[in-house]
Image (cartoon, rainbow, N blue to C red; front, side, top):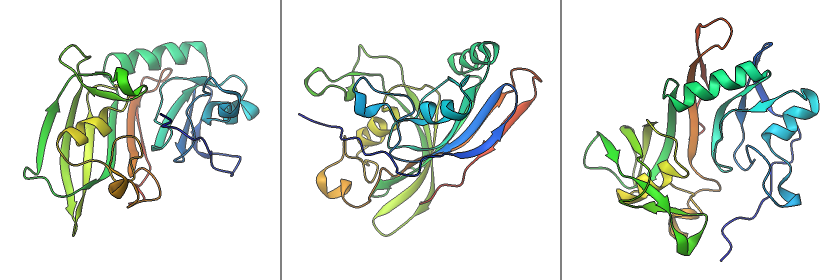
Length: 217
């Protein structure tokens, strides 16, 4: 079963939001891989586009191909190590905005549901008691006629965590071509998930930095 057809955005450059000697911040478009896949046709990605201009650029974290929003990249090994440690130690702050099907009964809450591979549908994930711990906090921003705008704040960064957690609540993300039904998938031309805010400590100055990219939903 094929889950992924890659058609990256044709615009060759990226939405660069900040750059200094240590870090680069971009607003990644939906449909672009964070880093290259195994196949030759998946070489085009956020990191390879940046490396054409800044060859020293190093990947620090990832966003799903269909997820848009704020990403940070390192320009030195020292910055790479520092930033990766911040992500691993949950010292960064991440905020996502999503459009979900239907309306939640609770306006806010926490999803604590371990995730692991779905062996029958690789590379998909599913809730598993023997999976890796995954925690997501949510808060309704706006209720619409048949869907809701929601803020998602993950404590962990598991593969497809936000997609699977919302699906587990019975409210899949609109436009999700991995987990949603065809009806919900076709309600939007893309996955309605955007990394709106990212905060971290600058590797050199040790000052807290926050970058914001308004969601398009």
